[in-house]
Length: 293
Image (cartoon, rainbow, N blue to C red; front, side, top):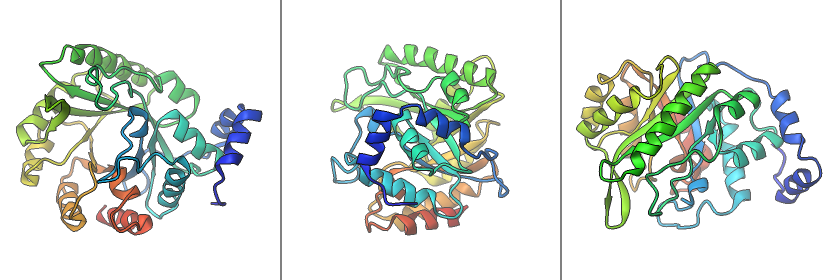
């Protein structure tokens, strides 16, 4: 990759906005699952919900040049299959030529702004299925947090079901990320117990009129031994999410390795843990994660 200059990207956006669509049309594509039958995707959709913090740094993801450089480093590593991103980031990467022979997963509902009173009412504010198809991308990802105390859950469920239906109409994969959630101390927190993750899977699997194109993006449970029960809760393909940056990366990698051994788990979709590792070595963190596959 050439050195990234934000001013060049801004100038191109200002003078030739059609360059985004041109880059999408030219992009060399590949199957969702490569020759290994596994998937390693870098997630970069947190900023759209105003979630810029990583570890103890509240503004870690605020600098777009820094984020793009980290993403380009990660995408260039052997074994990395693609990116999960909102339109702004995906289009920057398109213009940089970083998505050739990669899969692109469009992040769809980013309306549940972090810390907002309406966070659970997670409206679809980014990609629509038709946009993902037009851009020749490969899948759509949607976040589905179930909070039985928040009426916004029902609106999100309806939107999620519609998104699953529309993606299926375009024969595009829907990657649904479900959680059982609740408010604690003014914050939305996710229940990562085995029973809660299984319950979230049961509800998410039934969204929409067909599950033929649905995959699930699931967390690793508090007790990693519960992941065997989680995998038995559905016949849908699973990928693991990375979550927050761990104070003990070796322990996190060991948990990923154990969960990846389950036959219905097809890969990893990880963002902050690999883009902002505590030692600053993005390439090293990505290579370690790829090695787990």
